[in-house]
Amino acid sequence: MAAGAVCVFFPFFWMAATSLKTVPEIQRVPLQIFPDRWANLDNYREVFHRQPFARFLLNSALIASVSALSSVVVSSLAGYGFAKFRFPGHGVCFFAIVGILMVPFQSVVVPLYLWINRLGLVDTYAGLLAPDLVSVFGVFLMRQSIEVVPTEYIDAARIDGAGELGIFWRVILPSVKPALATLVIVKFMWTWNELFWPLVVVNSPTMKVVTLGLVSFTNMYFIEYNLVTAAAVLSIAPILAVFLVCQKWVVRGVVMSGLKG
Amino acid sequence: MTRQRRAGFFFVLPALAYFGAVFLLPLVESVIGSFYRTVPGGASRYVGLRLYDKVLTDPTFWQAVRNTVSLVVLSVPTTVVLALVIALGLHRLRSLRWRSVWTAMYFLPFSVSLVAAALIWQWIYDPVYGFLNHLLAGLGVPPQKWLQSLDQVRPSLAAINVWVRLGFDTIIFLAALQAIPSEYYEAAAIDGASRWQALRRLTLPLLNPQIVMVVILELIFNFKVFDTVYATTQGGPAGTSQTVIMLLYDTAFKYFRLGDASVMAVFVFVSLLLVTVLQWRFFRRQVEF
Image (tube, rainbow over all chains, first blue to last red; front, side):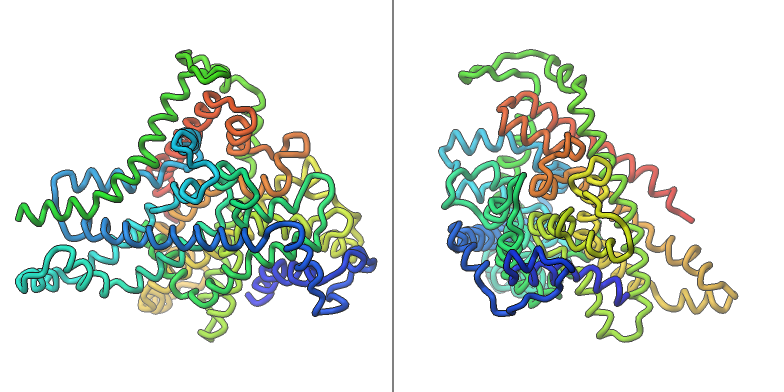
């Protein structure tokens, strides 16, 4: 177990070590594991110098935060509606939403791009965010979590004269805080790591997100790996920090999606 | 009562409207778009099944399908079997602290973007300065070309996907293992079952739903593989790592043949749907041991 875990971890170490090396160090024979100078941050400086990488990080942070928040709001509303109400078309609507899990994003990307183009949203934050505002996983997760909130609480609040939105806000949301946390974190990670849609919808360098920025350090013929790894560290560090701090919630999300199918 | 019902509908309305606009409507448009040829200048013309005929007889397209299937075949069984083995191993660890440390390490690659993962591995695979060839040289093996080799490019890409997905599958299996009551094993031990028998007749059948689900998730994930290929080989060398989604992307956004791309979009949608449905129907029973 330990040996396997170390193997799985090794690429991370190798990335970090390479990002601190100079080009001659990278090309030295025999292979050199550790950098000569651990405090050599020249590669990182060069990354920021060549590309507006700070802007990329900012763009990603913005997109990921907005998508996480909007996803939580819409998903918990819908989750509540599906878990605790029976309205005409209830089953069909839920089935339709879960069915979307079966639709690969790439199958809808062309018409979606044409719409974004028609609306003049290519190369804007709104355009970048459009397909990421809500995820089916979120609706599903919130429905599962809200289902186990005792209906008596809701009835009691109703007898006390609380409005429907008031019940949602004061009874439902506080009792599903763990699920809310899971959704925020998972959705933030997903949006941060996304490549396909940004690739389609972004043209100008200032609107690039961090995954696009990373790709821009490569080309077919010649790759400066000391810079690529530095950029990779920069792109991974924030998400890894979030992940390590909130790992419990991410695992919960995976298990929820796994056990319930 | 009706007031409440209406409230329920209003709660789900934003989600319905959003998914309708962003997924269902474009999906319908994709299907419709696959019957129209868009002429430069903007006008589109109804051409019936002509685009299907064109795309589905195009050797480039089938090459991409074969490459994709080969990537799926290389990575899905590897990921699932490895994840099962690791989950069983982690489950047997007595120290809870070490178990969570090792689990976290296996899970770490899952948090990273596929682009970053692919680039880290491209550096490890580098034919001249890459770590892997250095390692092999220590064992007396001559340098390999990995991502730049016609034969090794797909296994190398598959390995990246395995690395990324392993932790995700492991965690699902581990959670399922922890949900199995220990009384089952005690009963099996009293009946004189060996460890191997307990695994085959007890653990694996109980994990059946998770195995089926993980296989489906992995099939879908690997069939849609794009990021790793785009970041490293761009489909090369000589088209040997060109996948269906890569081809779809190029067709739509490089060559602007939107009709052709729509045909591929429908193809991807239908094949994933078929795979999932077939799996639920047959594979479910076959995994019984």
